[in-house]
View (cartoon, rainbow, N blue to C red):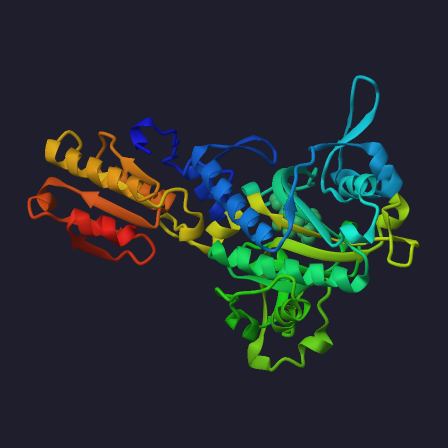
Length: 439
Ligand code: ATP
Ligand code: MG
Ligand code: MG
Ligand code: MG
């Protein structure tokens, strides 16, 4: 993309309404625009990162054998009357009435609807196990929407639902989700720690939340610092292998790590004192096993091997896709701006032309741009007629991992500068070498 043709409305001043750094940087970098409390437009740069995050989520869900579909944002109230949650859910639910006076709601989550799909089409245990998921906008009328996309009212969530014949199979689905989530967050450059949590309005007491440690996090957490040494890395895993998934769960949940809802001082005190930590965290996902809580009242049953109908065992598993942008920035920034992890960066590299209109410099930039694109990369070329300082400031603000700086003086010696955004390290190399380093 050439910046002169792009839409990147960066702000020079710090927006007053932003209380935390990720919100401030997302506004300043022209990624989002607030349209109403907790409701945002995703401007091109923000939308690009959002799609990269979605893509990683899809890839890891499909790798785990989970099947994508898409349910609507609006749901009939009657489904929620069946489960009893229409009245229970409270004021976070946005209720809508159509011209025929039918009650609808903007879905805050989808347990009821997916259970309805399941019961309409699945009859036999032979069709299990089954895990369906989607990435779709949710609405929760949060009492205090704040921190930008971190606590929006309209927000994008991946939510998946498993259907199994037995509790044991459903717990395997739970473990499979835990493993796939570990991989997902690591690919985004995040450490998200699974912590024992509370079921809340989804229900069930078998649940873990995934938390990114950050001072601005809204959750209070307590953990054994040894847990932060664990990484999933690029281990191969057979998602159908119960024992293998169980052993990952055991490894990542055997240390003390709990949110304040389930925190137990007596158990925590058994952790060696020098490893006891209390901190703040951002909840970026949660997994639940809740058995037959929805399948029983809603009649989601299958014929089992013995010919009898039994309600299926279910769980649900959510990732806060739009909240992740905020969490990633909270964990990756400096005083100049965002520092995108390579896995989610909106562009792979920025090209800064120090002397727009100088024909040798323009030609060198065009060539680098074309070569990066030919190699399948997506560079952002700042070809505007602007001061070098302003170009550097925008590049630092939007946080691309690499910057190639091209000017007439360097080119006279066949040199450009390649700068790493995170380390700040700059090397002077030939344009060809700079391209070779990135591809
Ligand atoms: P929170 O405790 O932050 O209110 P939750 O526990 O109510 O979140 P879940 O029902 O577990 O949320 O939804 C799954 C994921 O969706 C959460 O882990 C979080 O990452 C994300 N999420 C929930 N509410 C919001 C929101 N208002 N804005 C952005 N993301 C959200
Ligand atoms: Mg909530
Ligand atoms: Mg929560
Ligand atoms: Mg939750």
